Length: 404
Image (cartoon, rainbow, N blue to C red):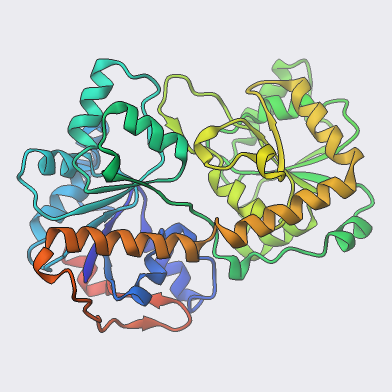
């Protein structure tokens, strides 16, 4: 079977970086691409950038998704004889879903979902009916999203749960006892850049007996953070808070995780935006690294920290809640280590790239076979070039250019 992959960011750029390391780097941000060849699925990645004009139009007409990618895909889908369209972000392919709803697109679409409107107002129900329900299968990253889409009227048979996670080969925890012995003052690590409520976290650590390291993947606006502290009657960041301003490579980032006592994920509550799985990337990394987690409550990440015994929830903007949660972890090192061990076991059991890719492959095959019932008993083995130590590379550079 042959699939084409479309996403809301540049996957080929990530693939190029992985190829430079001969595949010896984490691959979870390719959304299963690297492992689908194991399941007899060849995959082409649609280049992200084509028409600048259509990209600008898409910014104005966001409800249609990325028109640049979708129109290029429509022009080439038959040329390359794709059996199924794999959308790693179902809002990016909203126009394709619409074409499926009105019967103008026959190719099956399997899409990943992790966002949904906050209210069930009639216009949002119309949006879901028109621009989301056309997907043949929607793989939801949380039960909360699945339930919301059901309430919007999406047929249950179109919905399924999938759990995303890291490429565990590269996320190896340090021995927690060694970490404790090597750190005179244990620090809390807070990674991430998207929709982070660092102002609340900084306020919580002001005058607090604990160390905080903020790491914003080289994209954190440190001046804005310092301006926020001034608005909180602080002239500068407290001495117990450090900020990693440079972009770390993945190896250095994992070493930072290994050294951390626990992980904090403060999130902004963006009431005007869609519900979203904010913080999921860092959450799955922290789980893989065997760290206890304190996080702003977000049901869309698909993990209940307290129910699973891997961390603590804090309500949005709750400074005292953050202080209590961090103080509890610092005062209970044995329990914190147990949380970390349970987090790693949960990553190994459920939230990892292998499991995600297995479920994804099953869904792609099911969608293909449902669209082609006469071939439902046949599984065709593809001949796909391999990147050493990495996996499928069905999309060659010269082929990628043909989409532009």
